[in-house]
Length: 388
Image 1 (spheres, rainbow, N blue to C red):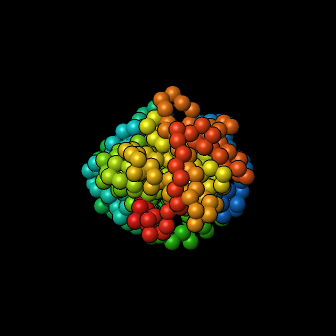
Image 2: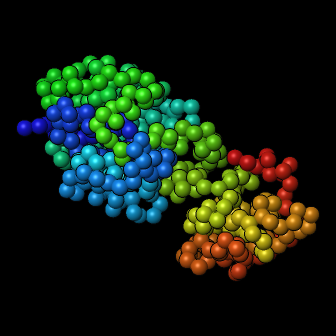
Image 3: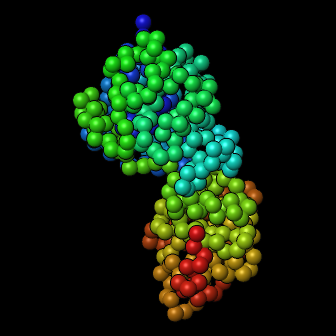
């Protein structure tokens, strides 16, 4: 009787192949997908075959993921990719959303950061520890991952792989089918739960061998390797570092705020987000909290801006000028810029009919404002030093 393993799947190519290789080597596999706040990826259906529909799944495969990712604010496209992969591979899929403790980890990682704000080693230990709990729950004897030796500089070299196993309590029980021939035999191999001769010895960043394997196995529903974690990206990491440097703290709300719009530092305790298009304006309209200030130009197409923190008179006037600059208001005359503070218990201006249509961007901030300022649109010499 096959021994059960739990595979971590992301929706990408490597983890899909790891499941398939483990199956071919004799294992019975269930899958676990993590919903994290900072993932970004290629569009759904961007795999080698371009497939968009699930097929070949066993009973219930993908159901948990599809239910989970339907909720607002979650990385839906990524979750759907994992559901498609699980269905194509015919494996049951479990979905786990990172808890609040994940944000605590980000502020004080025991093993430091990569080039951005990415605590890759600590994040992987966190994932493996969660996976241990699922292994106990479903009766899995070992863990399967799509890690490839030398592919990621911080967390996929030999010393890091060993460290992550030790600190997660899974030493010897993590099977990496794509690079297993380059690593010491694991307990699943030693005990004959999987056939080591059917595992591979892939190394490095090129995915040529993986694409060949995908064609060999007929896999089509995987995400192209064009995404990753926002925390590794310089522009996003800069926003996070600015938040932390000025006394802020990452949480679910800040994670969503940091993903959208132009970000400006208005003062030591004041910052702003300015929408770049209608979709961003609507999203920003959902992200205000009591004490924040919404700003929009009256009578002209333009952005919705959100002032966060200590928005005093000076910061408000500065934000009004910036908002006017990014609107269709003439540059050589004063624009009327309305503002409204978010009140406790009030619905965000981006909800329901408070969000304006594409032809007449007048948000609730302009229709029922606390006040209106007459300001000249800010020039580049003003805006450039504010950019985060």
